[in-house]
Length: 377
Image (cartoon, rainbow, N blue to C red; front, side, top):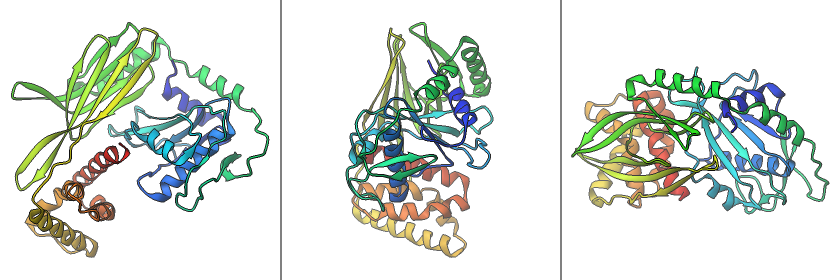
């Protein structure tokens, strides 16, 4: 089993970006430009490495390889994006890798592109790239090329050596458990061994509602691979554990005017198998709530007025500050109730919310995470 933290260190230490790995400070697949660039790199790495895995490391400074981290990203539906835009799409896995020196809410993103024997190309136009385009790696750059060129397998032995040197061992596992239990000791930290092989650590703030147990600030890591499987800063989570599975049902709290309700968002089940493999199944449970249109028009217009004030640097009233704290989720509710332009307004608000308050910016990121899950599904 590969220790993904070690793998990232070996990739960064190997050389500069090349034809089997790329590094990015961040990616943004919520925008057409970011989505187009991401798909281009996936296409190029898949075509340039038909016999071995390729990798993209996200959360790294380009100049000095310093690890700065990115937000936790739930990849459960990212394959849908790959399949929608690429012909002969490779299997792509996005994993969140914690590093000890990073803040709790930051990880390094690791994208693994499984080898593909067929030529991958864009299925349709995206940003400035045309459908039918084929990309390859030319050193550290993803470039469009004609597709009658001979693809030489020059990386398999190098990648195999890097992966072999990143194999996990007992010491790495024990150190990982000790580090997790110490770092999360204030959040009911626990560990469990599945199938005498998989070591899972998890923590969360416990809460009992109507005799049911929920957790917030849940952090779940597969220690063998040093992969963070789940992280939520705000939502409520129900957890069910058996001898062979770890199930999470995530709830989101939506509403306004002192009327809020928890809605099930997604069910995630991690199945641990006897053959030292595991798989993760996710099911979207979310049914968008419906609200009175007249009330929503009032809230939508209030949000727009607050956003204009933020743009102009005008001070907010006390009531507007209260409304600002709920602005991300109320824009989301408006969008779910067919105010289609509400998402444009929400995305427009990002830099102003980030500058105004850390708490409201966290709420913005959580709102965009909910939206991403629903859109990908």
